Image (cartoon, rainbow, N blue to C red):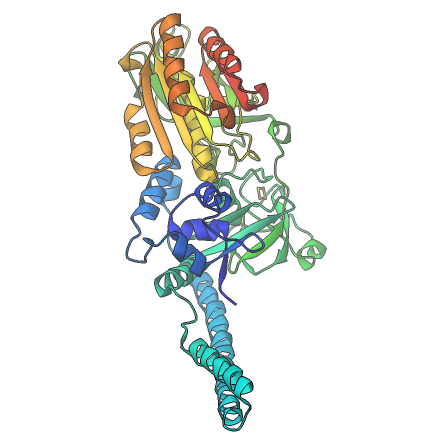
Length: 482
Ligand code: FES
């Protein structure tokens, strides 16, 4: 039987998103069997993919790493015991496959001999049939077991370096790398598992292993009873995967699944983004991270001031939180000047401007000015989920100086084949309408997209009205007002 891979593993192997694979499947260019693809079919659909050519995968990994800040850059090889266990598992599989192949070869040889003997004295038709059968069997003996050795080798290497995890009941899948805990790997993959402290104390990340082996690499698991441990429960923040796993775990089913939190974070940096904007980078304590969904907002308590702000970073890096704030607000007369090490209390998260994760539609983002902040969080989250068929970003400003993270957006579009970025300028309502006409004629099938719009209320409402007038169903449009 040909080796079959899940879409998550196949996408990683070829270096494309799962959304791009799904598109190939919908177009009939790639066959699946029970949701899996054969390596041979993968090699046919992507003839250029070879072990020597990792460039697409590397570009994609690099751009994701940039989104996930330094926590991801600390990635290292898996623990030696984990590596050894994975190599042992693969070796056992190899030995069993080799013995199966040997048995088949012996069988084929015996059948060929029998046919050759029968061939000597049979009737003409039987003789013809037998000789055809003999030919087929001899051909089968010569057919290589797998048509693409380089992909096979690459897949086995991938299986040593990563394990695949499937969550029940959602069937969400992700890969775990390096010395990551299962919780870290799930967050990096854009999944919102239940958790609290990330340090083995609260027990909220408790989950049941249905199949596979894990190893405890961090913290104690005293919050679990002996009966729970015997029943297969582990703490996801304390364990990594040795083999592929199936786990029963609870995920947040939308914003209502995330509790309101109060966290005291420290200022890591305060940097200038433009003449009018500052980037505030806060870091939470390791044991008290902010659980939120991409696109949500928090209240920042700075001195006696309460500031509503969109989080401009990805939940996949939940300790490092970024905000794009007006200089004028940060330098207000009642606002203390922030410097590294200062405390800022966060209250949140709030808001429903979040990705519709079950939707398979292409994603289209329209940001106006600093509406880019929540859109950036959504885009980084969409990249972590790796499921979108395509992502388009139109960033509108009154002047070119408003595109304060133009280089970042350019780097996304340079690195990702399915990412499109266009910086646009519109200083008045008529100009905005012309700009939207341009977007509509470029995208053409607006109605097939999920569209996310963020910006000042006046402008966002004009955009929403235009999109509704173009026939976009309201269920596919989400707005965030600044
Ligand atoms: S998140 Fe608290 S114990 Fe794992």
